[in-house]
Image (cartoon, rainbow, N blue to C red; front, side, top):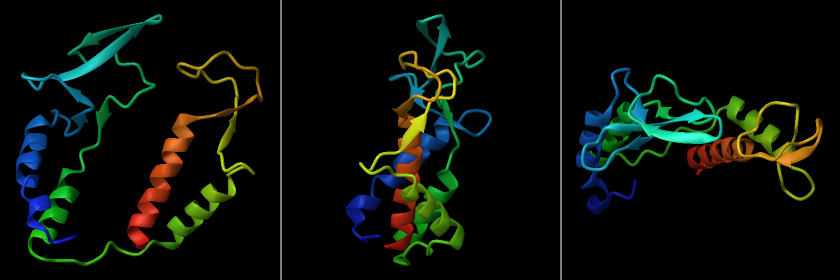
Length: 154
């Protein structure tokens, strides 16, 4: 959006690389091997993780594959390259409600506190039911929502 060519110059190469890296289902792997660009994954047996190229038996607690947003990135690049400086669309009423809800969920110390409900938590110590804790997944989801909202309303 700055119009500075130095920020736009590397994008065609990056987009071409990501297009070449797409998996057969159109997604992108979270990790790729250096030199070969083969998608990398991990399998889990008990507490042990093993590096693999096979995506047939992935643990479900991690986003090994990501939805490709390359079409939207390409469109934004083309708009910027053509000189279109139109700001992002304003936030919707739904986004306003979601942001208000997320902010209302903050405790008096500005944290999103979750309550343990018995579900398995990877990497977490064992907890008693109803024990409060801070969830990195909740934090990440809420921060992503708030960041997108701010980007759309600036």
